[in-house]
Amino acid sequence: MADRFEPLYSSAEMRAAEERYPSYPESIPELMERAGVAVARETMHAYPAARSFACVCGGGANGGDGRVAARVLREAGQVADEVDTGLERYDVVLDALFGTGFGGAPRPEAAELIERMNAAPAPVVSVDLPSGVDASTGEVAGAAVEASLTVTFHASKVGLVVAPGRFHVGGVVVVDIGLEDAETEAVRATPALLDAVPRRGARDTKYSSGSVLVVGGQPGTTSAACLTALAALRADAGYVTLAVPEEALAAAEALALEPVKLPWGEDDALRTITAAADRAAVMALGPGLGRGAGRSRLVRELLEQVDLPAVVDADALFGLEPVTRDAATVLTPHAGELGRLLGWEASAVAARRLEAAREAAERFGCVVLLKGADTIVASPGRRVIVSDNGPPALATAGTGDVLTGIAAAFLAKGLEPRVAAAAAAIAHGAAARLVPHQAGLVASDLLAALPAALEADAPETA
Image (cartoon, rainbow, N blue to C red; front, side, top):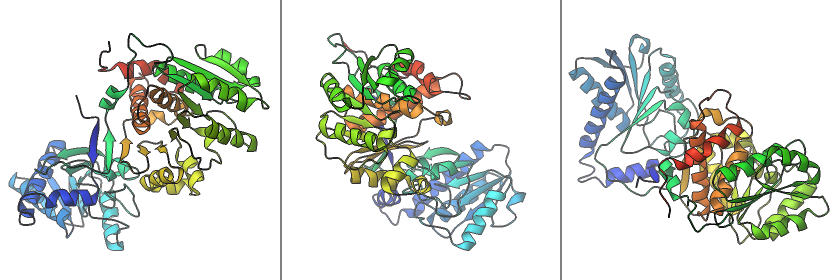
């Protein structure tokens, strides 16, 4: 069975891996030689027509890797100069300025050099990670290299996968330099994680294969709750109840054929929905629910009184305060929603995604799935999981409602909450990639693609 998670190393974890290498620190030149040779090899492979290379080398170990690469390039008959000016005269620029130990913003002289690399017409190959990117967080506090290719050593780094760092790396090649694997505090989810999702067996009923209660869908946004309900069914839930305001019932009936519809009024909402929860395994709360004091009160009362795992999304996140629950809770905000929960600007969440997700998980005492190009799943005291397989086409309205339905279905099948959230992100991205058109993709396109995404390499069940 393929690995369901791949390690993502921080700066400290990479340093520890190097220190475990035999005869360290005397073996540093050996590791540097391997790294530099690999960089030269991968650079020539990526740019076979290139004949001249500008090698911008810093004073630390990363610069040492770059100097070895420059020597190997020269031994291969190429022009490889260690320079920091005149970069426009070369076919390729090699960025070996900062390595995994870098943090914060570059000093003015270094920032100017980074800007010169970015302004050069040639492609830039970064050694280990683009200079200016924090290897441990993906944060970019100042100038950072815009690489066309990053050659990284041993394994991927957090900063190569988590935004905004991920947007600086270009293509990524991981090369082995002989270090041993180790546990890391962050991991990347792989498509093999979908193997963990239980499939329906011969003895299953519509209830035992996953029963989901979706609450939301006021007039004007009824389609959001319908997308969630249909996504839960397409993610292989056996029974879905769609609870919507009475005035939205007709629209829900027209938009979603298979879910059972349950209308509720303003006066009987809590009673009606809690009664329906008796036959459900999971509650998905929020898509198209609406905002205001009444809705916020309903959300809190449902979370307090319904003893089911809950996926909380969209309008249910508005004004949400921590709620003590015995059952699992999964919050699924985007950057703006998480910013409101934390009292941060959305731009601050975008700049410090890992920190924001971890802080929210601790504050709310639950699983937090921070949506984005790199979806981050954080939970108190557990390893962070990153899913980065979603294509840019997912940046359109309604796809988050689909993700909520998938996560609810996986929770209803009994998956551990953080695994259910990460697997949902993988399925979400896989379905998007199966849609034959990426331009103009809409959320409902994912519904038809979800079964195929789940069946790819699916294990047989008895």
